[in-house]
Amino acid sequence: MSDTGNDGGSDIRDLLIIGGGLTGMTLALAAASRGFTSHVIDRARPEDLTAEGFDGRATAISTASWNLFSKIGLTDILEPLGSPIDTIAVTDQMKPGRIDFQPEPHENSLGRMFANRTLRVTLFDAARAEDRIAWHSGAEVASRERGDFGCSVTLTDGQELKGHLMVGAEGRGSPTREDAGISVAKWQYDHRAIIAGLTHEKSHENVAWEIFYSDGPFALLPLLDDEYGNHRSALVWTVDERDAAGMLALGDRAFLAEAEEQMGGVLGALTHVGARSSYPLGFHHTARITGHRLALIGDSAHGIHPIAGQGLNLGLRDVGALVEVLEDGRLLGLEPGDAQLLERYEKWRGLDAFTVALATDGLTRMFGVPGKAASAIRRFGMAGIQRAPALKSWFMDEARGVTGERPSLLKA
Image (cartoon, rainbow, N blue to C red; front, side, top):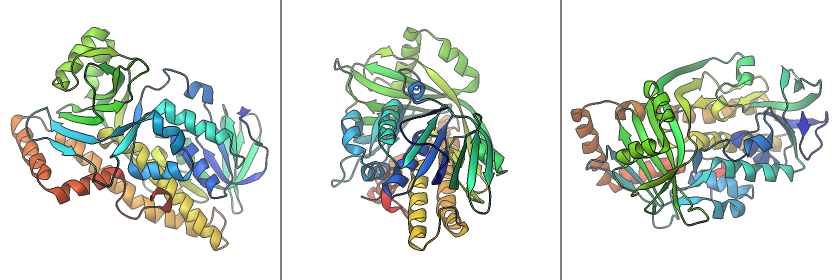
């Protein structure tokens, strides 16, 4: 176990955050911005998580999530490192009837695309500079305890860390969730997402493409040009699980030829593909997101299909809500593990997260119905949305995360 840059002794802190990834570390920083202290325990080491080639994924940061990053002082650093999304083009197999989502005149963009590595480096640098965060990297949790007056974890090296509220932020297979006995509804889609960086002939012009096929969406997400001026996009290609191994085994030239066929020439010729990786796609949602002195955030609480690019953004809404609940409780003299506060967090986030999860699952199934008739019906509906400004605005506001009861940290 290493302790990166801060005093990580046995002092009692407000939060015990187990999991120091994008969601967990954002929580630590957001809580610190409101005066809360935390232990952040992560089994991985930052140098591994930020190594070139560790994670080729890119993430769309919604307007609401960007507001959160602004409130915790990260946007000046991140602004020049991400590509704005000026348009989201949604099409069924590149046939007529597509939808073009564009921001309102008073909005700069629909979001921003960042390489996951860029987000990690920025978050980790900020955490190292924050005295309210004790960061324990390369640390394994041996046991967890949640009692009447506090909670604690014991690490495999024997060190005990104490706090008032335990937060599970480890991701889909959360050991903290399992340890608490919280049941999970889940299923697999029998599909796999193939991730790769592409270099292409034409500029993407800040357009994110979501091209739907019966096997799943083929998403092209705009990235900044590289240092040589080459145009780049991130690819998220959903394929049938049975075909995934074969797709990953293709040589670069054959893979680019397959990808070009799916794209319909929108970015011109593909000239290079980076390292390819993949992960299985599934759905899961917990029966509850709280327990005695316990809160779950991000993928520990809910895992959705990447069809709408809302995974991390949904977790950051958890972050904003939890910090606001804790801050309001402090004004009433309540400590972070108080049951009343956790009940409010449960009611606030449980329904919203479940609604988003069901909506993405429904989209996945609707666009996955094969056949010409199903495609024609989808394209007829999409053409109707394209001609209905109010309906388009509602969909855009949902994607930007600016609907419903938003935490103050996610407001402009």
